[in-house]
Image (cartoon, rainbow, N blue to C red; front, side, top):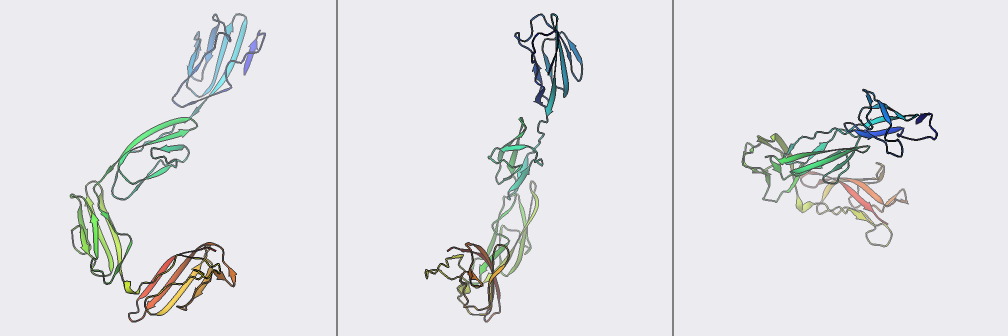
Length: 318
């Protein structure tokens, strides 16, 4: 806004609001078509009063007033300086010990761009390297870099559960580890691999200077691969006499059988204890919609009373 005394025409000198990033400064000055060369100035900032300076760098939040004495004219104008916070990040160098790690900014208030193209407030890192992040708060940008180095750790090649055929001779559990990593298995072995000679839980503890102590475990189960159950993952109940029914295929005899099929909301759409039962894709006589359904199958083998449980998904297409 402009307030004039003995001024023939209105003149807009400064914007009502000036926005900069905290820590920066902004230059206030006027051109010759606004103010004559002989004019004198009086500035009032939130921190001080400055006289005779024709231009001024401002950096403190608040109202800044300028009085310009231009001959017989007195020009007065103000601008409010608003400071946007510059993002503050400090991502430390870190070590990856086999498994992926999550690097988080712990601040969801900014817009982010990572060196791998991600734009969330955190990323998953799977390998060593040099990374950077650019944080943007309303135009105020801060860039930080960090390094991820590979630590010495064990990397098991098994998951949470391992099914092994009873007739399989090779029942080896192996761990990839560098030379300075010490290993100890719950079997008492300290080698990089052991033989899983029976069902149960196996765990291995690794110790290294950079990655410390880690423990990984796996549950080993044996199965009769000659009596495996084949369960299709999709079917098309459209009455074209091809793949119209869903049913498991058994290779052995069972004394007990049960199957339940649920929709995505957990409602039971099919159930049977008949080992020869087949689902036609209907519920109470009405066709079920195209979707992915969940099944749970339980069976007990004849002769050894071994219980088998299978869980999975079925895609229904018409």
